[in-house]
Amino acid sequence: MVSNGSGPLQGLCILEIAGLGPAPVAAMLLADLGADVVLVDRKTPGAEDLDIGRHAIQNRGKRSIAVDLKTQEGVQTVLELVQHCDAMIEGMRPGVMERLGLGPDVCLARNPKLVYGRMTGWGQDGPLAQAAGHDLNYVALSGALWWSGQPGEAPMSPPSLVGDIGGGALYLVVGLLAGIMSAREKGQGQVVDAAIVDGSAHMLNLLLGLKSAGQFVNERGRSLLDGPHWYRTYRCADGNFVSIAAAEPRFNKLLLQKLGLADDPAHAAAYDPQAWAQLHERFAALFATRTRDEWCALLEGTDACFAPVLNPDEAAAHPHMAARGVYSVIDGVLQANPAPRFSGTPAGRPRAVASRGEDAESILSDWCGSGNGTAAHRSAEVQ
Image (tube, rainbow, N blue to C red):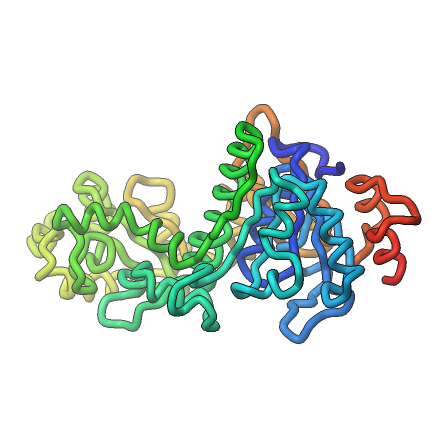
């Protein structure tokens, strides 16, 4: 077993069937935290593969073996690896792994303690299970998209973050780790059905509680976090943007003081939804009078709940982000460092992205102890 050298998940072995979107990100997170993640790559890129080599950050820290899953030898290679891992990750449409001969029943027969993680958008069953879709579709159906975007405009969420990553990859990781804990206690593995519609709906529970309490409503632009002028982004004189989120009265009071509006009678109605549209126009006109840097000089670091809207390169260079070492450049690629942080078992610097199939010999040796006579070794030799 090989890990990234440090991190709380050292000793954990994860097998990942190459795919797109949230499944590779889930496996990356596990690798970041020290797990030995073996990526079963295709021998040659498929039509839908994001074959971007060292730029595929989602594959950092993993070891790669290339097999042809359409051959019996390729399937046997995977099944031999299944016998030696704690969990397996796949992100195919429902039924694909079964048709390949690598479904949960087959794999759990080989390794009864296996946690078989399945990542899909719609889930393993239900009327939409076989339909194509992407992040935006899943969060639209789950309800998670409803309060996104500015009032009066079409709802829109940050690309991939709410569905693929938040409702998908992170929920798959939680499910896998919970399943592994259970398997170690009870000696029995199981299937984890991680659907983006499920996870993104579950993420709504905080807002659903506010909705039940009357602080959120189904009419967009009329709730505490999707309509007020004090919870918006604003364009500055230089075309850049800043964010304001002064929701609590004491923070709102400070913001108004900083903006020179403490004595403006119009802002006495700051929490009246009927006044939000007009006050938003006032804020928009005000923020358009200075550059982003000028607003940063006035508001950043105060309790006015302010932050500039930065692109990733700007974010990496920001003093706060730099002080915490949030970003780094690995193999010429800007990427965020492992998170969260651990005091006793800190994660190390991730290894660069492996070339397709480059680790076949070490994987088979470490996991299977394979000699020349094994199916796994024979399959690897024909790469």
